[in-house]
Length: 170
Length: 201
Image (cartoon, rainbow over all chains, first blue to last red; front, top):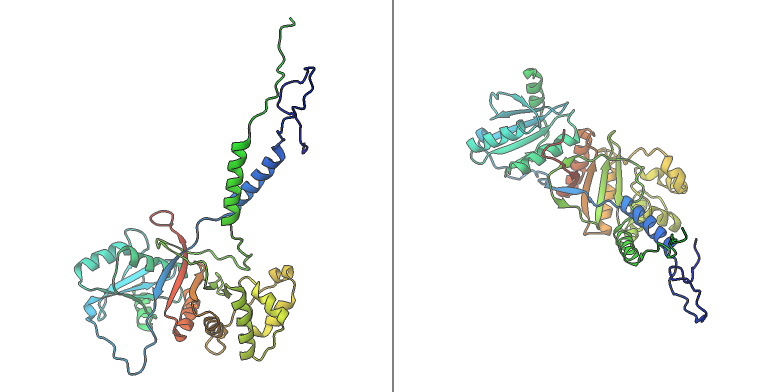
C-alpha cells in the first residue's frame, strides 16, 4: 500500500506515442492514515479545561499588640459547616437561635441574601467543623462569591459552637 | 450486450484539502498538548463558579488526597534541583547531582525528606507503586513549611495553590493553610473544577 503509484488516477495509456506522461500523483493514503491517527490521539489526550482557581487571602497572624476592630455582634452571621454537608447558621452571638440548612439553591444562598438585605455591613464567619469536608469549604466560599458578600472570614470553630450544634439536635 | 462500459477510471479522490486540514489539526494539537506527568494520587477537585484560570508557570501545588495525605509539587526543573539541595542542607542530607536531577523530573511527591534518598533510588516504574506516606506537616515536624520556604527562596514569583480532594477532611486542609499563614503566605489559590450547572448534586 505504501508505494508511490505512478499514474494512478490517470487514463489508460494505450496510445502509441509513449511520451513519459507519468503523473506526479502519489498515494497519500498511508500519510493520511497516520495524520488521522495522530489527530485522534492528540484530540483525545488534550484536556482543554484548565483547572479554575479560587483566590483567597487569609489574614495574617494576629500579633500581640495588634488592635482588633470590634464589631457589632448583631451584624455577625455565623455559618457552621457540619458533617454530611449540613450547614448550621445563626445570627448574633448572645443567645443565638441555631438553624439548619443545606447547600442547595434555596438553602444557605437564600439565607445569605435575606440576611444581607436586612443587615447593613453584615459579616459572615465561616466555621468549618471537625467533620466537614474540603468540598463544603469550597462550596461556602463559592456561595460567598455568588451572593457577593463583602465581608467574610474563615474562623476556627470553637467548643461553644460545637456544643450549640450538638444541643440543637438538628 | 457489449455496451456495458466498465468504469475504467479509478475512483480516486483529491485528498489534498483533507490532508491539509488533518495536518493543520495535528500540528495544532501537538503544539497545544502538554503532557501532564503521571500523578501518584488522584485528586477529585471540588467545583466552583470561579472563573480565574490557574497560571501555568511558577506554581507550587500542595495536593491533599481524600485520606489526608499531603503531596508537594513545584514546577521549574532547575528550581527543583536547587530546592532539593537547600532542603538537604537544612536536614543534613547530601544529595548527589544525579539525585537532584531525578528529583527535578519527579511528579508530585509525598515522602518525608529522610526517606527521599531511598525514594529517588527507585526506578520510575517502582516509584509509582510505592506507597507514599505524605509530607509531615505537624507542628513538631513541619517539613511542608520548609518546602514552602525554600521553594519561595528558589523562585520568588511562586504562587501557591492548594489542590484538595473534595472528600478530604477540613482539619487537614486547615493544617496546611495554617502552615502557609505561619510562613506569611496569606494569598493562595484553591484549585477547583468548573461547575457544570448551577449547582452540583
